[in-house]
Image (cartoon, rainbow, N blue to C red):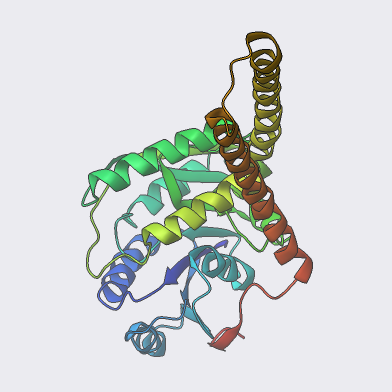
Length: 308
């Protein structure tokens, strides 16, 4: 009998863990599979780990990993993938915005021969207008600038086959963007649609700062358009500067109409300087990520676990 691993990254989710566990177990016991829950405690500061341990003490299907500190959502999911034993895995967050009841539909789709079944959001309840707009713009921008077809309006909530798992384990990037990596791998992929609920309890750990960092990881991992932008900007600025130079010479020697310390000179310097700084910043982002990969530090450090 095949086995499904349900990977759940945890960061300060004490209000949601038990309810997620109960709902998820009611779902998986309906399927003709063995199962395990892999909770990855990503440096929670509340009682999340204690709650997970209590559940694990009464249910042998519960496995957990406890990080030495907060390493981030994508790294937590990666740790779950590295340490699970299922031939299929489900990635789901603990906030209950993504209903675990959809796992049955995902499994049924997998039986049709798909290697990936992801959940596509029709609507997003309980989120600010700004977050909805920025998320919508980001996913569509990312889809348009990458050579990989990354589905829009989707998160990490999905079921994937062992074929995908084996490839993911061979992708050692420090800055993970799993939904992009899974799309890059290929195989047969499909989706189911759903209305996303609002958070059950607690507050989200995804601040705007983390969202911006996550967006940068996605763009730099799957597109070189920012580098092309820097190159094209350089040519454009050089062309503009050349035209201004010709006009300056014409004014000086033909029209005899010039003012020492001409304003356009200052504007040109500021314009060129601004483009240079933007270009250097873009290049720096790519170099920073290359540097992190070259260091080859471990993605995460496990402080405690009941996985043997």
